Amino acid sequence: MDFPKWKYHPALAALVVETPDQEEALGEEWADTPFAKAESEAAGLANGSGDAGNADHRELFTKWIDYQGLNDEAPGVLNLLFDAFTARGRQGDAELYAEVPTEDEAETKRQKLLADAKELGLSLHPRTGAEKIQAAIDTKLAEV
Image (cartoon, helix red, strand yellow):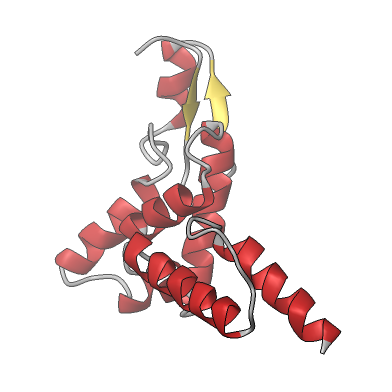
């Protein structure tokens, strides 16, 4: 791979190496991806060692990164986010990011808001967004 490049450690902050010699001097615990820590933990679980509380949250992290629109962040930032995410996951909160609302659920909610607005006597365009519908409803209810 071309240099410079990011290197990741399970317990230390990510850093950039400039040459192959610098990379080699780091040792075996340093990896090319921020997911190496989770991969090693998952391998430990598969071999019967390790703690079940340290399960691999890579898939949930990827969903969360997509949901938050953070895919273009620098590798060092992703490494820090992944460390924070897996720490939160070990606390039992990783499930919060597994449930990303589908477009169907969002559309159903928008349609319900549109129906509520109509019941209040509001005339809104059928393609009005949920936030604007809710704002119109809130304004109408404040007038009453």
